[in-house]
Length: 332
Length: 265
Image 1 (tube, each protein chain N blue to C red):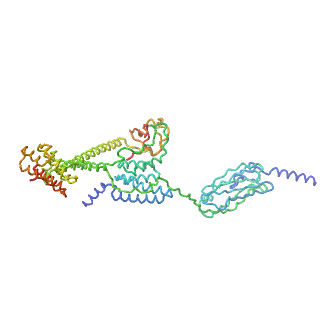
Image 2 (cartoon, rainbow over the protein chains, first blue to last red):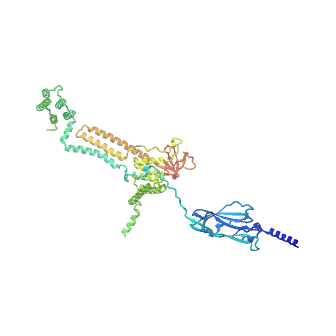
Image 3 (cartoon, one colour):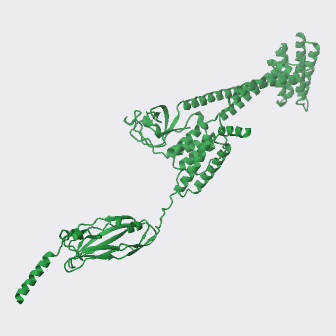
């Protein structure tokens, strides 16, 4: 009897072992459609364990942290699906970006499967990652109670303001002269108006005419003198007489200038050198006697002055100029 | 009621740019320029300030102030704001008004030095313009006028003395004045001819790196293989269909899109 009982027990045990599901297709559709069930089936001797952890307990706003969900002791590691945290409203309220990080396909006999998420917090502060229910199928439990669950613990994440690192400013480069405002006036120089050129064109002749007319009106004697100077002989004589005082022998220069004047103006022979010869020559040329005597007297004064102990340098020359001007009708 | 009606009719006819507004903008631009100089250690901030200054100087330039000082400040502001083409255009525009201004000439030379002109494969493809030459860049109209006044005065004095006192120096002085007057006339004629030649061929500045093509379309082959850098000065020959036929400094003629050039004004 005991032998029969042992065999029966073995048969029962073998039937029970054969009925433990190890794949999703072996459990019912109702069980598979349970919420928060991600395909984990517990092994015959162990229960499924889940845990998660953050890569850091603190992060700056804008940075991402990694959340790693580890499922252990599932007999079907290749059939586990990733919980979609992005569809959960509580997660979406906390994190602006929830990205699953692809994992390598686990081995058929792997005892642990990891699902990694990249989370980016929305706000600054201490965030509490909400607890998540993880359901699994436990074949050892009585029928109707095979679906068991574990709750992942809440995690805390401190989010701080990002530390803004400003690059050192780059100096502005350019020609040195450009870093100074231009000096001067903001008034435009412009171009020369046409009226200015017309004024110059017509103004110059007008000024010239006015100058000449006014000068002749103001200096009538000077006008006559100017007319006189048009005679080459007279002009040269007057210039020589005015320059006579600068000569080494003023009286001699005056006498020479007068003799040359008489030669050029009245035809006196150039060989007439002494006062007597000059008077004789002028008389022969029918020059009025009073002029002959004036010329004679002037030339004698010149000779006297030349041999005087202290000659006068200007008086005779001035008298000679007056003589020429009087003879030419400039003065009386 | 009548006064209100008259005021209503008159207000729209008032010019948009009042002298006060121009003065205010000019003062603001000057302040921004000085602030930019002080902030030159931070290029980003300084450039923004120089941009503000350039806007103010541009406003006054458009309002009719064509002084060499404004043109110089305008060109310097644009250059320091990073807008080399506008700086070149500003200096060129200033030189058209006062071509003899030393600051403008130096500023244009500095701008050209900052432009990466490509090495020409043939002389006609040279893009770098020669330094400004000609009489306009040496003497001003006012200089010629002042010299003409002096020369004509010498003529007047010389002839007047010749016709009155008959001084010996009168004729030489008049001759010198005549020579001076003749020289002024020649220089004036040269200045006028250069001004007319420049007006006949308006200058353009390339505002974006582009390609000089053989025809007025992007399907035409490049006239110069190298890219025409922004800031390059060209002279306009004609326009057709959104394209401008231009001549580069070396003499090569080609077409540029109108969107890539700016008229110097």
